[in-house]
Length: 160
Image (cartoon, rainbow, N blue to C red):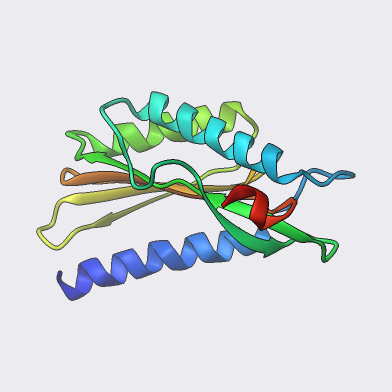
């Protein structure tokens, strides 16, 4: 991996982490873990549909982790990353995903960079509602979805 590719990947991860810290729960309510998981799964499925293609989940289902809710209660968060082969037009794929997210009242950030061989790497990132962060990264080599649900109230033991 070239230094330029590593820098681009680091920038995307940093952006995702920064945006994850800015995510907010719906006003006036906290989600339970089941709602957080189901909302995240729904957004991933909508993202896959918008992007098209044959996807592979990187785990058998949403993986759970312990977290702390906004009011300090114990909670559960989920991740469920996906990947597929590259896109012939990464920009169009990312813009289609961004349009789907915007139709569901998510604010979206789109970025363009290049991978080590000079081909484009397009990304879209959003936060809020049932996700702390979700990103789609598309290049001619690979397309991926990286997602972390919101922290929902609950006991991690119930989801392991």
